[in-house]
Amino acid sequence: MIFVSPEADKIYTTNTILGTVSIISKSASGNMDKWEETVVPASKGAEGFDVSLKNSELWTVARDNGEIYIIDITSKKIKTTIDAKAFGADRLKFTPDGKWALISSLSSGTLSIFDTETHKEIKKINVGHGAAGILVDPNGSRAFVSCSPDNYVAVVDLKTFKVTAHIDVGKNPDGLAWAAQQ
Image 1 (cartoon, one colour):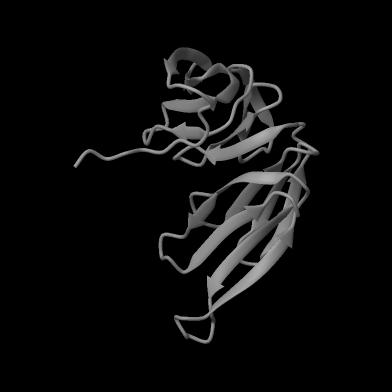
Image 2 (cartoon, rainbow, N blue to C red):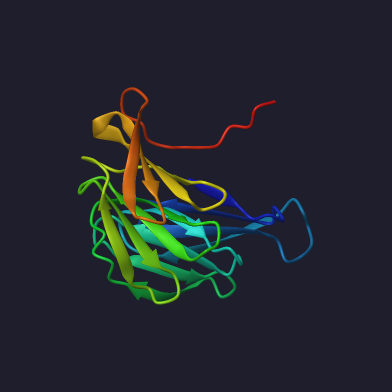
C-alpha cells in the first residue's frame, strides 16, 4: 500500500513487519531528484492506512494490538493512539468527507466505523468470515469490502450500516480499486 500526495511531493507507506510508517518527501533543498525519508514507529502489524482529507493526518491500524496510530504529517510524529481493539485489522480507509475511518478485520470479519472527530467507534458490522480491502463510493454512500475467505465483496450502506449485497468475484479477493471506462 502506498499513498502519493496530490502535489506528488510526499509518499506514504507502511512496513508491517517492523511496524513503521515511512514518510518520503522531496528534499527541502529544492533538488527535485532528492528525497528524504522519515520513519515513524507505530506497532508491529501496522499495515492499513489512509491520509486525511486535509492531508494533515495519517491514520494507521496495527493488527497485532488493534490500536490506531494518528500521525501528524507536518511534525512526522504520533499525535495520539486509539485503543480501537481492532485485532486482525487489515485496512483503514476514510470516507470522502473525512467523517469516518473504516477498518476491516481479517480475523473477525468485521468492518468497524470510527468517528474521526471523537475517535470513538460508532458501529461494527459483520461482513463475512474475513474482511480485507475497502473501497468507498466517491459520494460516500457505500463501502465495498473484500471478504477473502467468502470469495465475495460485501456492499455496505453507510447510511443504515447494513450489508445490502454480496458480489461474487472468485477466489480470495483482496485489494479494490475503481476503473474508469475509456
